[in-house]
Length: 212
Image 1 (cartoon, rainbow, N blue to C red):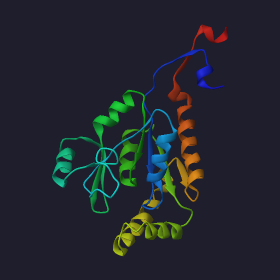
Image 2: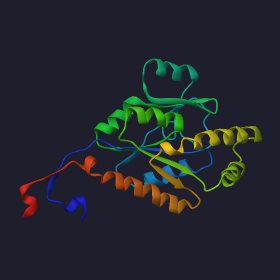
Image 3: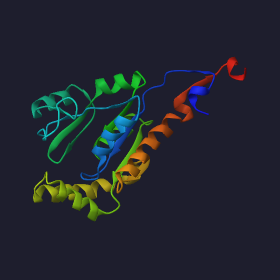
Image 4: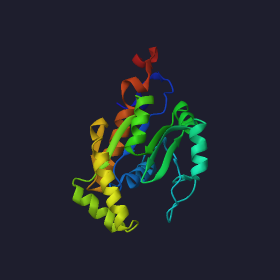
């Protein structure tokens, strides 16, 4: 029986935070984009970054592209829910939009690295943490080479970072192996739907009409 068929009062809950992490080349960004198209009441938390915009990216949709000075000013003003330095660039989740969505009951999905995920875990214990990676390191390396967006030096840097990121895998609630995009997408949407049905999140109060 779904929640829509329960004759009860359902109070608005806080939005759920879904953290998606994983090494470069693992496919987490593609999975997040596809999940957003499939799942209702789910929004992407647009991060700020100091890295250069890549071909096909849109400011304010993929990221908010800011200067180093602007980013550091935002840090000083306490404007981030989390921030981290990744591959020599700064990334951060703006706190204002983050809190607005949570209070309005909108679920947020964040594509962030393990440093940012640790900060979120310290502040928001109810967040749901998913780690995305392929079934072997060899597959990861092959994907980085095939996408041809990085030179050899950058690829080696990303592979070194990947080894370090994978060490944090035990801190995540769910591990999603992304060898098949369709299967991995099913796993992510299943995690989202399961979290939405957890009793402590739903806040259902059975009323007298329920038994009529």
